[in-house]
Image (cartoon, rainbow, N blue to C red):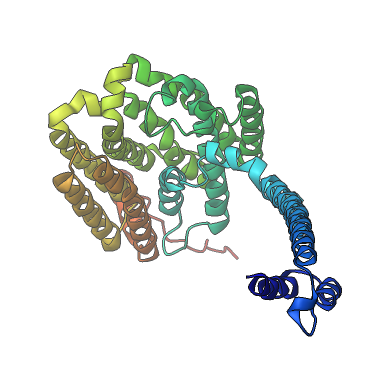
Length: 417
């Protein structure tokens, strides 16, 4: 029994103790004959080895615990460092900070939605192109100036609209993300920004003749009061049309120094009818919110009879365009363009679903094509136009002379010699 325990003890010593301790214990306990070692000595050696084994195992456990604690502290420190690095916002360059600061103001002037700028510019472009001389291109410098003015003044109009409608926009699903309604900028900041926009618009306006400066400045009242019309009348789109198509008068005045009412008045009224058509379609997107808030529009006024009303305004628009073309002695390309515009608007009205906001938005955006088609027709018609019809009309309108002058033959006086 003691011999068996002795062999097990030697195996444990070699397995669990350092080589020096195991060698010493083995030397003491190993003898040539087992009977030479008293049993008491073997028992004491066994007890001593057992206690050494326990102490060594405790040291190993303590060493492992210390190592684990150090590893945990290191891991926690690294994790905290990584977390702090992740929480720390990335550094932005000055250009990125400038873009982030300017983004709400760009949204305020709808720079991301250029459709309004196009719709404001096209009446100006029509008038400038109609005023060009027969066989000539329109004044491209004037077109560029009016395009710049349309961009600036459309943005100013949006700022004025949002200042008036800040509380209303917050209640409408489509407009509650606008900068003023969402609180991205303050009302004071918007007023300062509006002052800058109007200053730039004035800078563009003073490039024109003094008649155009007076005519352009007179439209500012419509720009300011339009957002209030939806609170008092079901015809705010009529006021918007009067404002948006002022360029039909201003463009001709800028190139000719005066307004030819025979051509400009039908063109202006046609633009007003066109605005009522496309903005009524646009207003159908918000009609449910408008009814809850108490805001008025032609979409609510026309109701289920919208298509009939829009068809009537389209017919009036085409009549006015034909009258303007006749006053300017336009040629076949112009009238072809008017026909295409009529077909385009007829297709819009026929396929319109006034209860589908996405379809209303699609139809509204397609009206930029209407403006472009008519502009190209005016340019081509003017290039093919000659002065002969105008001269014939003037000759027919000139009254015939009642008295005729018959020259008498001159005779030489007789010379008396």
